[in-house]
Image (cartoon, rainbow, N blue to C red):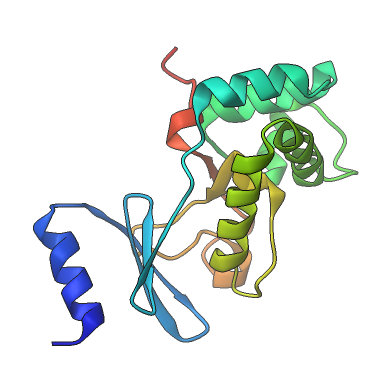
Length: 172
């Protein structure tokens, strides 16, 4: 039995629900909760410490519009660029996802150790080894077939993003 098969078996024994299967660079990745297995290694998403995030959010010197964007994302949980523009009644230029990245960099500067972990994870997850600062708060959504919901995967007209579970505020 290969090392990869042993890792899969071990995870299945622990009853971790499979969330997605993603094909990148012809390599199969399986995500179990917040873990990704690739090349016999587990890539775990850094879980954002909520208290540290809230402190960093307050220290980041964001504008009222920036706070509104973050609160909206954290409350609704699933969003697209057009849904943000429509619901927040904002202009489409500059793109709100660009603003989100700028906001995440400001928040990340107040929690540098965690932000570095997130960026390292982001690069490792990327099909092109690039970072996306928005990964501090959210990541791409996956459909029932565990394929990212995005134009590049032929599953949606727009990228669909979802807030990280620990930052979701919808039930508060």
